[in-house]
Image 1 (cartoon, one colour):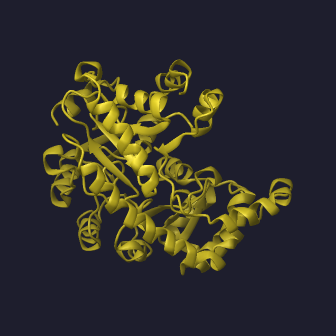
Image 2: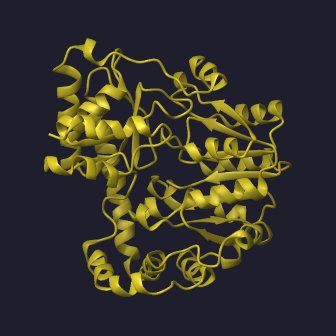
Length: 398
């Protein structure tokens, strides 16, 4: 078993995000117990072992030499995806692109449903802008109603709106026709962003994207992540799609070498491994349905429908997610995402990444032991606190 003090202290020191996998591994290294990761939303089936072997064989050159400029790498990615490179901007992870979108295109207020990916709330608050948070109703399974959200944007006077589709952490997803109707209703805003970082995992796949519409509209950006889809968070690459003028504004602000040689190498490998990538997505979709079924058999635990590569669950009454997270980690070597530091969520919820069936069996076993073989009094809930009184009032009304 891992040392509880060394490992769990990392969570107390990180109030906005989960500690890095590397930091957790270092803290638990002496235990000899490998971590089973249900926290970091990566594709577990890609890259293939053959791709890792190829990358290993090229490691010296990758680390020694400068990458090509972003234009060269973007042109190759665009060719693979069938996009016009003038409409595509690649970034050092989607977070870099979110940062530049905020600096360049968000004026005074941004509207976003919560809970959602933390950078969409945190980034604009960090630069002094107003963030109008539309609370997704737990009573309705955190489903976003587009008409109600449009009304909220109008009532608040927001000039930028963001939706994540599928949403993180709950995996809820609007159909393409609903997203297009939302874009039509908000066509007078400065900017509407559709973050499709997890869309490749959806049952409908790329066909549900609105990227083809983004290139035709003056105020729409579609954001995509490559690290999540390709199982390579550490490479740090993502891209956005927008009309050439809007894309050009973001591209002009980025450094010449904002992409690294690992990103270039992977992008230029994609054509020959596209079939394996497609197969990996199909397997994740199958695993997601099986995982939801297994979680649904645990008494008192509620899992929500998901189109991402993760499942959002509400814990049984009287269970504190922080204590459960620490127990799963220290006693079972299972790393989960407790959502108490996500605005609009609380420690009643976990986000569990979809993993192969053998890992899910380990997770279910750990949950059974932690939830039902222990007195509930040892897992009592703690009060939610974001550090922002206005946000706390919003959450308490959920």
